[in-house]
Length: 95
Length: 299
Image (cartoon, rainbow over all chains, first blue to last red; front, side, top):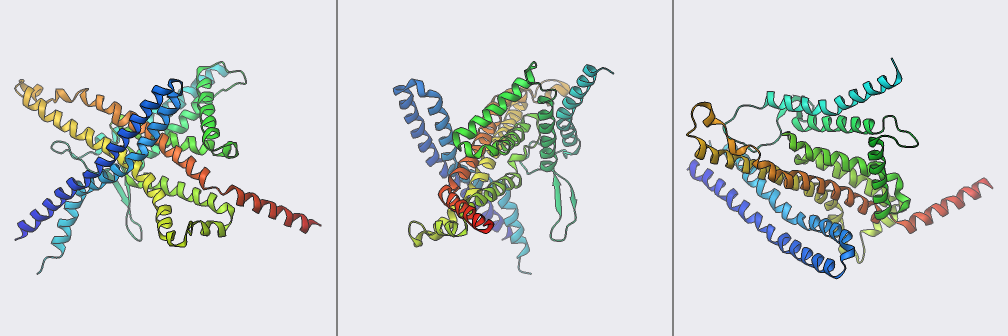
């Protein structure tokens, strides 16, 4: 019974980590958009390349934030959560 | 002892002070890392703990490394500005002037000339963030991949932002939460709290993802080289040859580019938040009122 419970905990953590990384889709699309627009802008006005590039990288890094939230949650679920959940289970075992 | 010789001695001492902390950190890490099988992704090593009333205060690798970073940056600044003259004749003075000029230009460009006093603070944040992230190149645990350090910076910046928002008086600050309509108040408060959270998580997540990916690639290459080159005789079979050099290529992106980028972005966001949060009109009105009051009191 205990094995089953721990197995469910591990499976839940792994599935949750996988689901959390779906958050990577948004920043991917967003950064792609930003870069394509920056390329267009540079094509139209090659002399403004420096300003456009630095603004684009800045915007990309900010757009990345939501993806990084997902990443942090995923990492926590894989490396930190199983241990603490199993600990909670062990502490609450019926005597 | 002549003056030149003395200057040279001071230079050497500063250079040693710049490099020695990192060397000591590496030695400490090598000596205290427990032998383990393969590569483990874990938090910072805990060196010792100080008993405190609520919970023990852990002194970890992160604190030690960030202290080394601080000492190293201090020595670097002293080295760059040692023996400066009105007419520069050494390369390092030119470097120092270049850095100061760049930071001043950045502040003027992004915040306006009113905020020139912020230049040292912004440069300090940028420097400590960049050095902390780059310490991963030496094999140390980068302090920025520990949430505590970055959260500390985030809270510090948040306090400064709030201080500058309060410069226009308490009433406009509170009123700002009920705009455009009072129903928005909870969202505005959440947005306000999310400023330090998002700033610190962005920095932390970027550096941490680099560390995790480098570790995973390192362990994968170790396994691969054991599979391919394990037949070599003697101790040669135990050395993971593929792990030499190849992970450094990834390091260029994940440690160098990402670390410097995040330092720049953290400083940039600090500047933007402070500059946009400062209520200029209210501040001016308040200053004028204060001046009037002082004048009438003097008469």
